[in-house]
Image 1 (tube, helix red, strand yellow):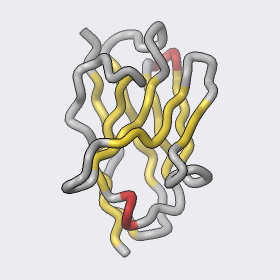
Image 2 (tube, rainbow, N blue to C red):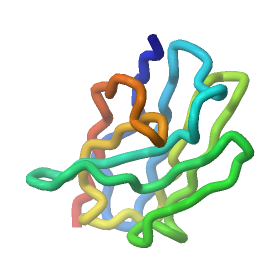
Image 3 (cartoon, helix red, strand yellow):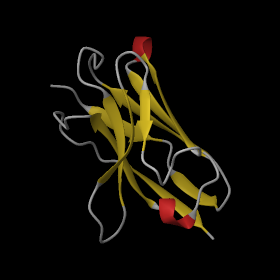
Image 4 (cartoon, one colour):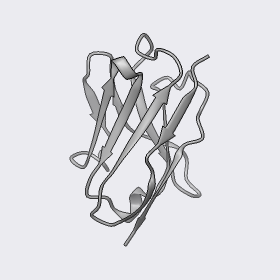
Length: 114
């Protein structure tokens, strides 16, 4: 069973940057595309970006041009570089396969102060 551990969150001022990491306990790259999701207080979890095995990426409109998803096959790790952060990016961020087939990790809190 693959376990996912997210890290890299924190408190940052609006306009700042953070880089999130998602480390998998086993090989994830035979699976579906991997995605980063987020859940803000009182809202449903939403997909913000995903990357397929070939490296193609798709972004939600709210983060396009500001966030970059990448993957390191050798390290079984997926990253999310977040730039020009806004207060509305405040949420707990999670990673998972695009079909959400893995158990959810604990997530990493991102708080953007205005």
